[in-house]
Image 1 (spheres, rainbow, N blue to C red):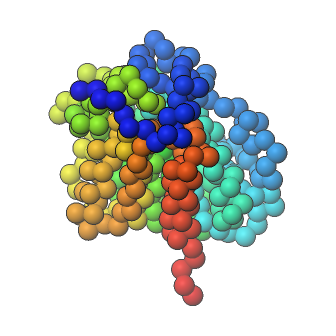
Image 2: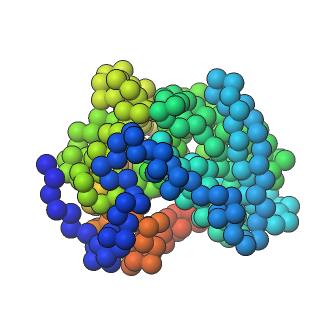
Length: 320
């Protein structure tokens, strides 16, 4: 059932200007257009920032080529933390620079090395390719810690929306394969559940940013006829995971007026029930991706401040 969302007034004011530029009622035939809108160029991303952005190429899932960009402050020579970033876009759009502007800030603020991979997208490359590409990128990053000059014992994985779902899946793969050790996962409004059965998954159709129809389109592109059925891998749809123990410290936030609200709350609750650490924020009146689309709104500033406070605590060097 669709009901009128109760948007924060500052956020509601920007929605008319977003009409036609954000995926609402998106069908697969509209994907090429939204891909153009969600794929910034390298120069758009970097602008005049005092950072280096170096491309690397490795072998991804099934032997395909995988490109990654490493961002660090200019003249970086002292190892700091590592941040592995997975861009959003519902796993069907975007590129490695989409939504990646915080990487520049983090490289400068924390002396961090930030790596973002060009994972392949559905429907051309359905599950498990996107999450397996992301996992392979994380392995490459850790294998090159000395070359990139970061501390492999201080690495956080970060993702929002579809990238948040892939970050959660990559973290699960790392746990289950005894792979790279992460100290934290930061998941902003992550896309976790292909079943689309929660009240929030059904409620926000034709409204806001990334509605029910767009979500169904993306999940079907990822999973095909398996979508919503019993044969879906937990790494591609992390809400399917029954055992959420043994995960690194987790940060999850989500808008109170968006499709992903209920699945994100459930995921955070399951981590806590399994004995893990998880900080959860549900931002009143917020639609999907509000912190990027309306960063000057009071609720967006509060959201960004909470994210930064968590990240600062996680990335702080151990005492002594």
